[in-house]
Length: 68
Image 1 (cartoon, rainbow, N blue to C red):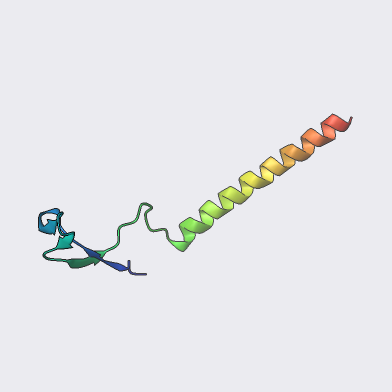
Image 2 (cartoon, rainbow, N blue to C red; image 1 turned 120 degrees about the vertical axis):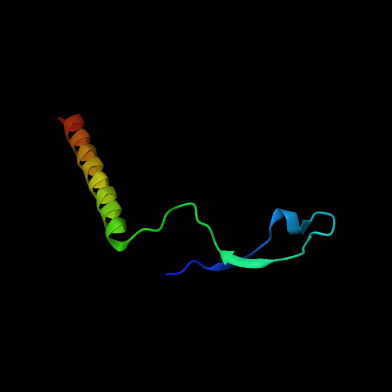
């Protein structure tokens, strides 16, 4: 999937008094996170699910041990 295009302006072309850009251009939007493949996303999801399952088992064990 292609990144969306956004309107940008270089600092040298920006007029701070009139808040206008002399030479605006379109560029791809930058992201904080890198692009993930479906396989990478599935691996991350599986790791989170395993951690939640382990936390649930520890919670059950704690409740069981407190009752006895």
